Image (tube, rainbow, N blue to C red; front, side, top):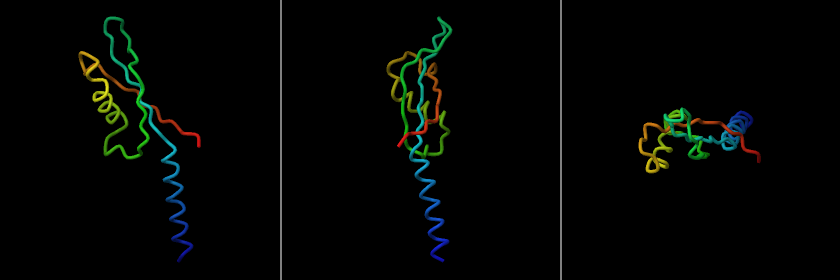
Length: 89
């Protein structure tokens, strides 16, 4: 019995370790219709593994609007590009 429990516990801890070493980097852009391009406003780094039921795109956009919303005239022009990054430990 201990072998089964230990094996399950070990695989669970390995799964948690893999998830903890990952992070999402959101590149936040503002749509510039005059120049027909996106202007990079900044990058947001998220290390939490639980996005609270949102997709990475939704979570990043919500965070970008809260962070950069007061710096732009139209929040509807904000968009994010999520990138999954593996941390080196």
